Every structure is written in C-alpha cells, then in structure tokens.
Length: 447
Ligand code: F6P
Image: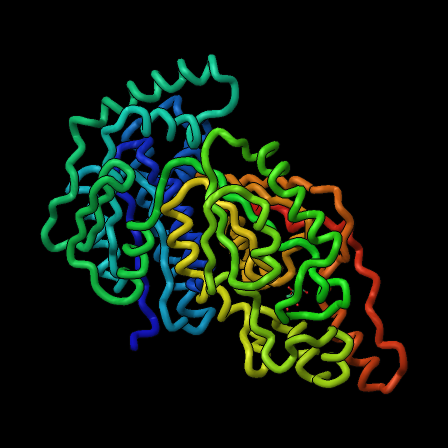
C-alpha cells in the first residue's frame, strides 16, 4: 500500500459557494481520522498581503501574488512533513481554498503541484440557488447587524457577479475532480482513484452544507456510574431516571417543538431508558455503544489500577491509542463512529444520546480536537450539548438539567498516581478528587 501520498484538494468556484465551509469540514474530518491536513486560504494570504479589509479591494495583481505564496507555502509544508515526520499510511493533505475559476489558473496549479509529486483533486462548488448564496455570505463573509448585512450582501453579490463572465466550470478530461452542484443536488465525479481521494469524495457526497445544529447528551447517571464502574449495561440510577423524565422539557425549551427531531441512541439500556419519555422517532445504533473495555468491563478504576497497573499507566500516557485487552481504543472508536458521522452530515435535527467516550469522539469531530485532547474532553452528565458548525469552527452551548450526578471525569495522570500507589502496596488507592468546575475543552482556535 502507498504510504506517502501527498494530495492537494484544490477548491474551485465563485465566491460565496461554500468553499471555505467545505475546506474546513474536509480538514476536520481527515484530522479526526488521523490524516495530517492543513487548509491554505487564499483570502487570508490576500488580506495579510494587502493589510486592508477583505471586501474593499480585489485587484488581480495581489490575488496572483497571494496565490503564488499559497502554492510555495503548501509545497514547503509538504516538504517539512517529509523531513520531520514518518509518512502516515494514508498520506498528507493540503487544502487550497481559493476560487480558481479559469482553466488557465487550474492548469498552472495542477502543473506546479504535479511537478513536485503532489496529486491534485479539484473540488468545485457550483451554485445558482440565490438563497443558498445569500445564506453563505451571511454565515461566512459578514459580521453582525442585519440591516448592514443586507446592504453588504448586495454589494458582495455585485462583486461576485463581476466574476461570472470569466468563470469556466470544470470539464478538463484529464484532471481528477468532483463537482458539487447546488449543495448536493447533483455530483459530477471524474478520474477519482485510490483510498484517500475516494474517502474525501465519499465524505463530500454525504456533506450537507446548509447550516444546522446537532444535539448530544450522555445517558442519565447509571448505577455503574454511581459505583464508579466502567462498561457494563446497567440501568439508570434514580437521578438518571430524573434526567430522563426532564429531557423532553429540556428539548422543548432549547430545541423547540415546531419541527420533529430524530433521536439516535446506542443499543445499551441506559441510553434507551434516557430516551424513553421523548416522543420523537428513535433509532438504535450499535456503533454508538460505549467504548469496549474488554477484560476491565465492570471494574472500578481502582480495581484496574491494582490488577493491571502497567496498563493503567500506559493508558494515561497515550489514552487515544491505548486498546483495552480484549476491547477497544479511542482510535478504534473513531473508526467505528465514522458511519454515524456520515449519516449525521446528511440529516438535520438529530439528538444523539450516547456515552462518555462515544460523545467525546463525536464532539471532537465537530470541535476539531486533536487526538491528545479528544479522550480528555469533558462531557458532563445531565447536560444537553448543542453544536452549530460554522465555516471555521463550531459554536457550542450547554444546557444543564440541574440534576446532581457523580463526576466520571478522570484527569490525565490520575491513573499513573493511582497505579504507583497501588504497586507500592500502599493502602487506600481511592478516587482522587475531581474538579468538576473545570470547563469542557474550549473551542479550538481559528485554524
Ligand atoms: O465511566 C463511564 C464510562 O462511560 C465508562 O463506561 C467508560 O469506560 C468511560 O466512561 C470512558 O471514559 P475514560 O476513557 O475517561 O475512561
């Protein structure tokens, strides 16, 4: 299998066609899967080069300068990757976020990259739906105040329309490309080959570029949570049951009842019990089941630290990759959840009721957490999380049910301390005090 593929995804399309949104979504998805990816945004370069506001001056000279700079930096980045890190099995991906609406421009980019052994996948977003275009300008290009926005949208559309005459849609027979027409109404795919390109194309076909919200919640507190035991298939505790009863009103208050919702749960008792008072359609996913803890299933962390001290230390040292004997790692879980992400991207108004580890993986996908951060994301019990993906990142709101629960969060190295104490044969290897006031991991910085 090829191990050192360098792939550039080169965006194509008039301004306000969702190219930036697509670029960052693909980047987050690939990074979530463990593929090294970076977005190179021509607008950003242009802004920096001109040092003036985005929409004030679009002279061709600086655009070309910015584009050259982007290509140089991309090639340097690939080179850096070659020198610094061992190539991953799946390769490295740079995403070139620009308009590239002429054949001449695409030929220049294609030839420059190909000469340096970089494969090129063009991703064109073609859109003539006025509502979608206006919505996109609102979401990506502009800042607050509606009145000003409407005027600014008109100005921006006038600027975009000037480019329409030079726009040549992709028809180059020898190039690899996918054309997304009107946000998923139709696709044209040409010469796509290999794992990486197919993966990206498959993802793009599932991607819905309309703005939407997603809701996540852990099941209510379970009897195993109260006993500090992991895994198992326990029932809810009385406080967990209280959360289940309160959830419909929490949904009604924060999500609204105007439009129906679909609730996805795992196949485990605690998520189904949590969803049972919700009057919307439900679907069970095996893929949403909690991390399989193998031989440690049903044990407390203290018991694990005593019985498997080495494993306990190892887990804290590399929690993402640590696989429980006879069970799974977070890395395994991400792969198990990929179909859920694909399906989630296609739907609107989905509430997922799952578990600490599975919610962490889904949360990390939207919030762009890296593999170090992912297994330590705080996902408190009895809290509804609302995520609104935007072009550059994802907005987050937490709605607390105000029902007490245990805190199942274990900070990094708590296990090492416990295991050390355990192997030193000191007594009382008991639960460390966990600071429940620590916030959920913050939004990742603007990429
Ligand atoms: O403690 C509740 C739980 O859902 C366990 O079933 C699971 O093993 C654990 O959380 C995952 O959290 P961590 O990876 O931090 O141990």
